[in-house]
Image (tube, rainbow, N blue to C red; front, side, top):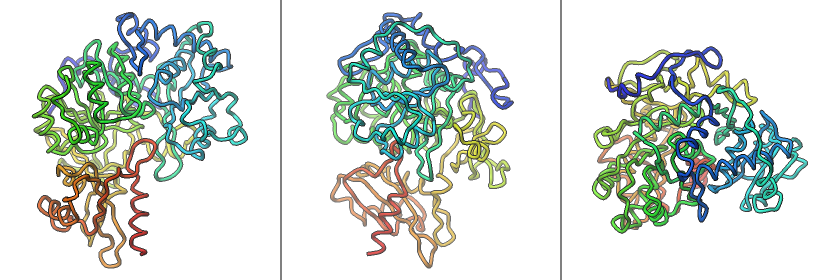
Length: 531
């Protein structure tokens, strides 16, 4: 079995939390997220905490802004336990509002700025937000006041009202318990209404420490945030992990390949966590040698497989960059597995091993553990697993059992403890009695250098039950349907060769959390079938 180093695991003990869960925890940890910030402030008061556009804030300057903004929130009637919605892009205000909420014991509810009006109304009403702070890019999509009766105050960050709130008298910190809710993050809701996962101080502290220890991060790291701060990856893997290391969050509002490399070079970025498509894009569109990337040590990725061709090209062009796969979810406060350092090339087919405080079961449909190298659903337990969903006892009861979150992901574990992710259980395609895991087909296709991203779905078929349809984003006009089928046929069993291929040069549809919307692809496939 592969294990994390003793210097990590020696500091772990078993404790009881939430509903009586017995879980492994870091014995030496910040008491809460405010204590995490205070430790960073004490360690590096003049160290940079945030770079956002032309704004640069040290920890001492950030502390002042947080205290003033917290005072302004208190003046608006916000108190411990109240929900404050953040409808903000990757910007200075996102961080200051987030941390001001925590300082007064309020619960931050970051919402992706791409959400539409109906989704915004649902989330604001469901969490009972008292205050909403938003930017200019969402003003026209805000629901009307009649549809959000609990929302008493709405403030635009570019108005005198926000300026006044940001320059108020300092607020005294409000004591919080580590199991108190810190953040509510709403899941994407692709199969129904979004669910609000409750991320506690305890959850986030452990996840930030998992990233810190497993990635070998030290004091004063600099991480480039180029995924939404409102998503669990941006929020935890970057923002809170940088606070844990007294490091600096460098914010990027919109990912563009050349801008990403330029900012990484200029800000001496040391760590990132992105989706593989972002790595593919800068390799495809930029000359990496034009940028001074000597400080970039850790290249984390997740959300999709990294093509072997991408790994090899990154190894050639950025030999000092260590690639580390991480698998997680909102309900897991980000990571449940991380690929240990040194395995980026040899175990690129794996999402890694369980994080030091995590426990993972691979079970069959009856919840019974399956043998090594056998497909089953991943059930995950640990201090990073949220206690449940906000005001949704039915979903909490159905998706959590004995401290485990039932992920719905199909995976397997080998004798060395490495876990492979095969598919979402609902995305498995059954073609003529054969099971086809869409992720397996997607993994094979993304290894082709002409493929930017792809997705596989099942199409109803009266004879076979389902047939396989792949959607491929490519900028190579020579990569046609025949080439797609031939490439898959050369790498997988013949029944996994796509029956239908849709090629496109624009990105695949994604929801507000950045996940590919396969329901939209199924609708598109159905329309072509109806013609």
